Image (cartoon, rainbow, N blue to C red; front, side, top):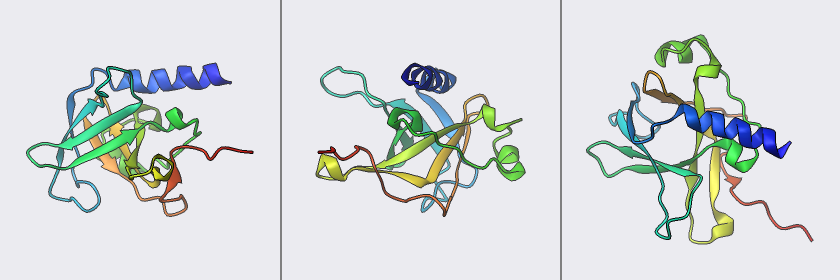
Length: 149
């Protein structure tokens, strides 16, 4: 099971290659409707280690969103791909799209959460993106699972 998750994640992230490309969000992101151009980059820790995190930086603005792919959290994450979403992103099907989750960084590691309610959806081939609002999902999902006794 773990190897199939790893393979799926590798496939999803391969679709985003090469990283360091610019995506256009025709209607912006929630709270930032005027910021429509974003650069997607890998997060590079200072110690040179690999990281599952990505950074979505607004071009020309000082707005940066840390992101993570749901499979990095072992989440079987699905989102509705309405005809409107497919049209906005110029996609043929949901298989063309890559969901990423916004990470909310907090002072304590155990308090860091990901937003399952507002995924960022990217179409790597058209370099278009959109953010969904899924009210049936939690806004704050723990990045790290609590240790069990």
